[in-house]
Length: 130
Image (tube, rainbow, N blue to C red; front, side, top):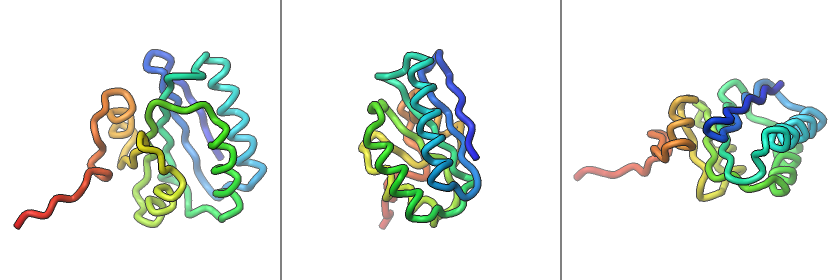
């Protein structure tokens, strides 16, 4: 399942993904996402907040499908992926390797990253204090 909403004021596409996705659902999601970019004239300079906090770890076939489709998408200026699970964070880190992508603990934290450049707490480097 997925939901796509667009904040045209900030040129932010907000996506919520949930459940175990099939390859067909993944392809439908990508097609609807492309359509949302075109309809809202967000081909360049848009940002995305993708909430996967309700998604279990996905099967490799859907991950490969998403990776292939994402390579063909217009480049976003910033990406925030919202997740709480450490296993999901590992999968997200493998899928989203762009320098402008961050993992966030909440939608608000993700929006702060893509709109204002505020680094999410979950993705900040850990500094050891001696």
